[in-house]
Every structure is written in structure tokens, then in C-alpha cells.
Length: 383
Image (cartoon, rainbow, N blue to C red):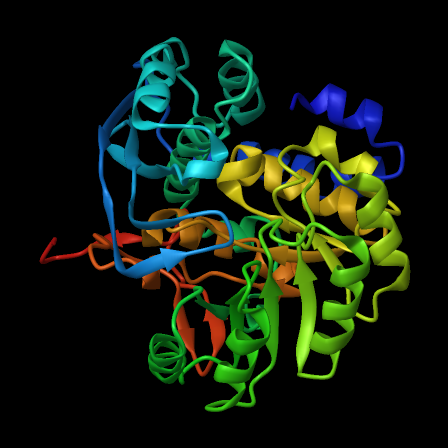
């Protein structure tokens, strides 16, 4: 979304934007003279496919999978490299083919100043509609690059306190009771668990988890319930079992039913599949209690910052989440986590072939690396 369009629809958020995302851009301009030697050469975008291997079969209400297709990107400028990533789980509708075709159209060589971030991202946005994961891969790499040129992490450029990050949940996918117990025990370092629901064994899932731990839970239904009255009964049952919120309980098209449920629910009802871009956000007021912000859905860090800013002005709760991703995209999302009420940043822990080191979970809490850019480094012994 272009900045002028964001300001146009965001009368309720303009002030916050001017003290947030725009301020960081101004700060970049002020610092770049001392931190980056300007080059006459254009930016160089490169990309390659990378299949993410899941540690366990990952099952949600609609499907199961053992891998997730991905693409790793880099942007080079004046000897410095920024890293980015696109992850394409099935429901987003993107693929290796679509992302490759989109990135092949991106000509960053026309830009000789990486700090003109709004211009660069407006150009990327205008290439074609949709393709949000592909756009996120460019956005993340650009943020990583500019942060490295300024020798600062993005949480600091946004003025955020790294001590105010929330705890992160760890996701327990739908499975047999025996496997659910095993996964729950493996996640004992986490103080919160996200439990996938939406099939015919929801109560069994919760009771199995509760048989081995009493930590707070998030419930993620992935549009799996269809009837609003049964959904309300289930939410009321969950509220007595340490669940903090329910994510996307009904299909996103059932807007009136979701509003009905939210008005009666003892727990916050969070939007996930129903929300992709900033343009979608205004219609969420009165329908959902809060939103799940994911870089792959909205198009990257720039868009996510704007979305969080506007949602706060609308009085909504914020969950910062992720897909199954390497530490590249997860750590990029973690830069925003001090702005969130909750975090679900475990996507890198669900895969067995992560090639980066970035954010960590220490005593259950999102812990940001004090490194420039998005804060990742390549592993010495790559998988």
C-alpha cells in the first residue's frame, strides 16, 4: 500500500503513522551519510528456491503437509547483502512458480539509493496485485540491507524496547493423543502453546494437552467450525480451560456469524485468514477483537508496521505470527513483537533445515538479537 493511500484511509491512524513508520524513514535519511557510502550502482536482487522440511507432519483443519515451498532472496548494494524470504503455505495461493515469475519482473537496478524505501516498495507493489509473500521477500531483504548499512537493528530504528517482547507460543498440530502428548512434552521450554483445532477431536486435543501441562493456550481453528451456535458453545468450553483467545473460528466469508460470535464470546476472537492487507483492516472493526499480523500475508515489515499502527487506533488486539519459515522471516517479524500483545513466532522451530541464526526463545520469551538489520546470520555449518 502506498503511503499516500494509507494516510487517506487512515484518518484514525495518521498521527500514529507520522510518529512511527515515517519517523523511521526520516531517521534513516539523517543517519545514512555517516553509515553508508553512496554508490552509483543499482540494487541487485537475487533469489533461489528453498524447500522447508517440517520436523513433524503439520495438520490443521483443512490439510496436512510435511514440507513448505520457499524462496530465499538477497539484495546487494555497495558490498552489503540483505536477506529475505518468501514462504508459501497452501492457503495463500502462491507457489514457487508464481513467486519466481513475480521476482523475475522486479528491476531493482533502477534504484541507486536503498534508503528510498517507500519509492522502492511502491514500485514493487505496483508490478501486479497480490503476490504478498513474493513482495515480503523483497521488503525483508531491503529492511535487512538498510539496517546493516546503518549498523542498527530494526527494533531500534523503530524506537522499540527489546525488553518488552511477549512470550511466544509453540504450535501443536492436530494429531493422535499419543503424538500430541509427545509434541507438548517437547515444547516444555515454552510458557504458551497454540493448539490447532477445527476437526472432530477438538476437546480431545485440549484435554490431551491439559493432561501434561497447565500453561496458557491459544486456540487456532483455521476456519474449521461452521455453525455459530456450536462455535459459541466451544468457545465457552475453552474459556474454562486456560485458553486466551480463539483464532479464525469460522470461515472468513461468514462475516455476520463472526460478528455475532465476537459479541457473545468470553474470549477475544482473532482474525487470521480473513485479513491480508492494510486495506482489509477497516472492515474488521466490530467483527473481530484483534488481528494476526503475518509478513507473508501483508507483504512485509513496512506493511505490517502500518497495519499494527492502524489496528491499535481501532482498539484491536495484536498477535504477531508467522508461517513455517526459516529464522530469516521469523526474526524479521520478531522486530515488531514489542508492539504486540501476543506472539506466535515458532515457524523456524517447526523445520529441520533452517540455515540462519536469529531470534531465540529464552525462558519462553521472544529474545531479539542485537545485530544490525533484521538480526540474522548464516549458519556456519549449513544444512
